[in-house]
Image 1: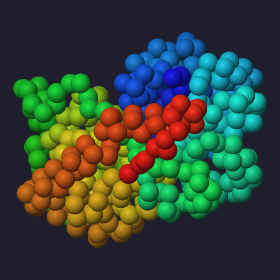
Image 2: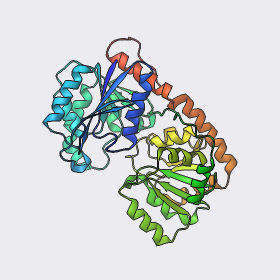
Image 3: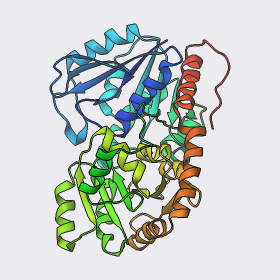
Image 4: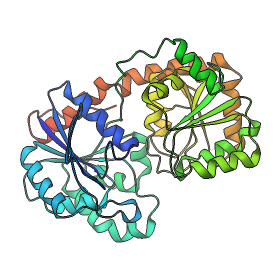
Length: 385
């Protein structure tokens, strides 16, 4: 079975939750005999093709990116036409308006599925202009995949197509890394010493520093947090966040910038809990929450009506607080820092939930069931949690 994934950017040009979600889907479906290719745009597509473990990445030039929407040219359309002849199923990843332009040029009878990662949150005016094209694309899909029942319930767009029998739910997932991060060596302990933290005595934020991530709220309440806060990641907000930390003269906030894959897992392994203080529905799922679950870590996130509170169940796997509520965020941080027994209990529950819902095996099988359904290999309708 050959699957063509389509999204606006991909590794190595960019990294983020959707890119990682695509990578994990490709890796997880390999065990079921699926061959994947990924069509994407790049500001510098040299070389045009990159062999990655998850599949071949084919890049066309991104000529412009108005409102964070990468736009391709004629070459993108040519590559798209060539690749849909190769594919058994076309798998689009929404949102990306240029995706809709590509789909308009598809006159083949190839079945198509679309993973609906997020509503359009930020560009509300452009959304009104774009809406007819968006709905044309959604109507053309064989199946639309929502990434959590929470997001399905809270998204007016998804609810509309669910009522038409076109939406099913497949949670995102992550495969376990091959390297063993369960045991520490001398160099790992030296790294923790260098950044000034002790195992089991710090909170961790991990991700790209964007406006909707709410890290400014975490920094703002750091004075009342009774422990270290490690911020691992880079992005557009890094300068403003460091200035905010300097303004409050914070001694318990550590900025690490972008970290290696090894150090990422090391930080997850040794933290008390992961904090994802995102405050907008742009945080549609929170892949880092699954990574924390995989390491048996408790989590703190905000209730956004999105997948964050599907991965992190309040009172079971961690704590869920109202967005833009500094007092609640600070209280949750201190509750886990001051109660390591509770944090460990929640972490074990998170690991159990990861194994049952978010593992590579579950992710791969669920997607292969959908692919098989839309190309008619199996008449059985897949079941999803």
